[in-house]
Image 1 (cartoon, rainbow, N blue to C red):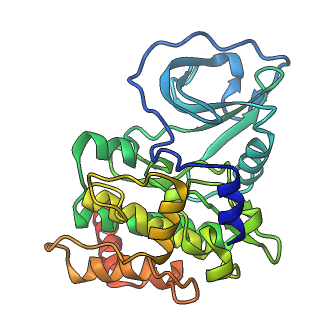
Image 2: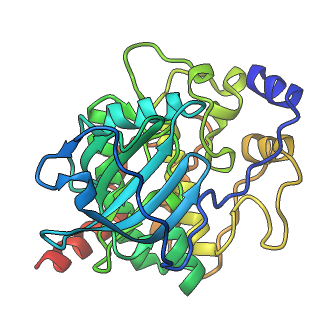
Length: 319
């Protein structure tokens, strides 16, 4: 367990599950003046953007709701402090520059408002993230989760076909519009797969949503790079269904990182509520197969009856 030993030597503990703190829409200080006349195609000068409120703050920066002065269009603006976050910024900007999918949050521009900062202008998802909705409304129904699963699977299918592994699928990184369109966001720890990758190069992300092979590649192997995203999706869906992190009881959280590893890698499969359907149980089991070679791929999951239900809902929504 090379990664486990490395983490234990650093005395790391489990990061809190919600990485992004969502605040009410509150007034914020003005944007700094950019160091140059950088413009964004289709939007205009950076100074034409009016900051309306803070949408969230995370470890790598802040996200603001902004309005374009001329068109009144609403966007989300992520401002990242560079320096210690250079690798995070590099990963995210490199990937956002080359992707275009209706199931992935669209990037409208990347620029430097001033020295030491990077700003990413993105489409605004007006219902927030799945974790925000969960905290406000409680657990999701199977029908809602089928619709969500279908959309996220399509986003992952697009990314994987373009050799991109997300590595941090979780409720706070799945953004939602009021008409329940779901899109994948936050590519700060994502990777473009160039060849034979090892999990030593992909140990960043949120521990609670990491697959067994990411937590312990010595036992579970490291040859199934994309399978980790499928595991993360399964944990996310089950968490949103049962109302708590599914590998522990509702009233318990892991006391340290090693406890999480032992339960996820070697513990029993999470239990389902009695009312869970066979289709939902089967789908989650296909996602949470501990052996990555036996875990279903995104393409296989899209043919699962539960995902087909999600597709039918999506088609009815469009119609």
